[in-house]
Amino acid sequence: MSSRRIEHENYLKEVLSQSITSKNPSNDAYDRSYKESSSYFMDLKKGLLNKYEGKDLLDIEGSEVVETVYGETLKITHKEKINFNLDDKKDNLKKELMSNLKILPGIGINKEKKLKSDGYETLYDLLSHKSYGENAKNVISDIENECFVREYKILKDLSRYTDSENSRNNTLKSLIKLDPFNLKFMDIETMGLSNQPIILLGVAEIKGDSIESNQYLLRDFDEEPALIDAYLSHIDEASVHVTFNGASFDIPFIKNRAKYYRIAHDLDQIHFDLMYPARNLWKGILPDCKLTTIEEYICGITREDDVPGAYVPDYYRTYREKHNIGPLIPIIDHNRMDIISLASFLMRIYEESFKIQ
Image (cartoon, rainbow, N blue to C red; front, top):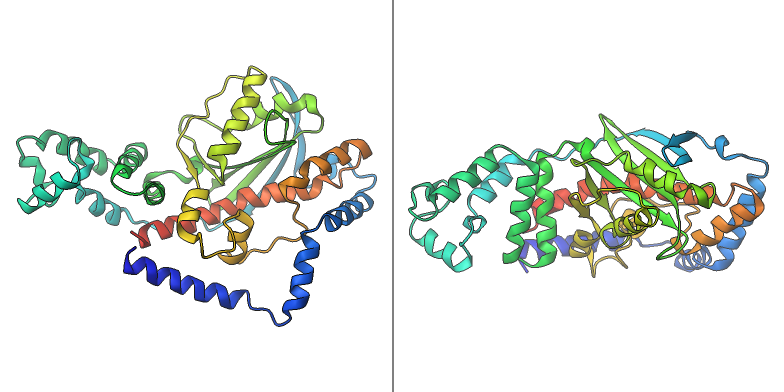
């Protein structure tokens, strides 16, 4: 581990230890224990049923019924300001790539050492090399043309010379070349871990100085094909998925449900699953690497009345049994916060990818 990485971890541990110091730790411990108990979530549900008695789904701010080729579904739209800014580090990345001879086919760690000892320090130097000159010319052209997809693939290919976790961080550097609108921050809520309906599917997009979230809610189970189709309308070949554990769960889950309904889809675009770089950066420093934990300790965001995924099926069943939208409200809020916070989280991880080598 580099001295820069050790210094960074020690600093972060000190900041976190100060941020979680409590003036009354016994009360804090009791409150935290209660808010993680089943009793708390039963009490919360009862309160929501009382609060929203007689309310309709269309009473939810930003809600409307939308039509798809598979029928109707409910869409909930929110827009808020965001300072989404991936600092321009094009020169840093270009210098880093140009000096990494392993980019070229046939050059490994030992070959690179030999070439550099012979005076070939950069790809530019290799232009005059008998064996590697033509490949160097093509790769230099790709880098100077600032193609996001090509640069992503270059950084991903370099993972064969680094550990897998660091390589996932490095691919984030290619975001320099991407139009932010193509980022699709996504999360789903389901009735179970497999072969169960998707009850809520949220996607957020950067639009100028704002971030817009669109959530598609399952009013009843027969609307699931329409919900999936509505989400797919946001995705094209230039889209880039940004999720937290979405590579293992969300995207495969949507694919499976789309296949079940024989809905044509293409969800094989580039995917940044932020769970992996989060583990690389903060495993052993934070209590755990859940998204809500990272929000609290790294981003300073604390959620109120948040309902974990384990309680979502019960809350959704209560909504259907009682014909009361109350239990849906925290599910909707949780999902929206997940996709919105991914944008801030991405900026933080992106910055860290350039700090730690």
